[in-house]
Image (cartoon, rainbow, N blue to C red):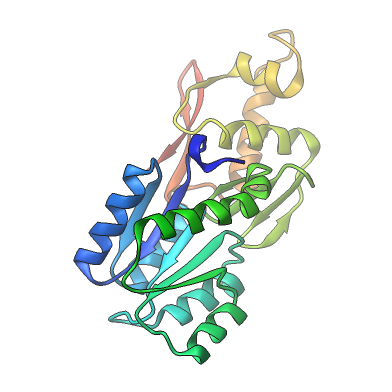
Length: 232
């Protein structure tokens, strides 16, 4: 999958404001979406709400070290996206340690725009195909190739219909999905099926996948119309 025609979200953890602004400008000019934080605590909070496709990490941070964030993303949050270190630490043991703990690439400052973007493109070629088979919403991941749902890395048992309904909802954030639309998309039928069937299944999706304001999103019921997945 080519990153030139795919919307990619990149999380930046960089405490030096000029460096962070430079990275955001480079990535935005290239057509990427991005968010930036200057400390590990804020970064992890933002990460849990909106899981990015890739991450660019600094090493030395005011409240932790980037290597600790790397380990947390890989081991605790089960993050499978690309991770690039961008740091002034150039000791061989640091580079080896980062790569062994799960970093995909390691760039030493000062960064060069063309090189960074080329490395991101290369990583997306590696991760993009797998990403296109997955839908993520905070801790919720739907793997369409395996028809498997997980929340915080723990598998959640969904019926085939519940899985298809969850995919339909997560594929259409912010869009009003009418009950008739959902009946056609998920059940393959029209209004001859009682629309309360949709309501019942949507209620189970909310509960089983724990989609609630606590995770920063909700599936809002729009009276007489249908449902809409909203970010709070």
